[in-house]
Length: 87
Image (cartoon, rainbow, N blue to C red; front, side, top):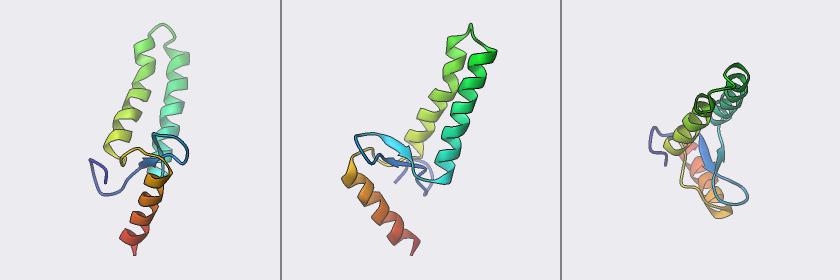
């Protein structure tokens, strides 16, 4: 269960430990963060802290809207919870 809201945007990775996008909102935020990072890198090359802001925001939102990070077992548990919750 995420810290904020009912729907998890990020869940356990398939391989390894950590979080990856599991919903359209999570994928959209990840894409927007990458685009913002590249745009800021080109427009503000002499301010490295400003270029890090999109990544920092992505991490904060992933923690707030994600489940507990884990391996394949945690990902399977997330899928089961999604299926039983939406039925």
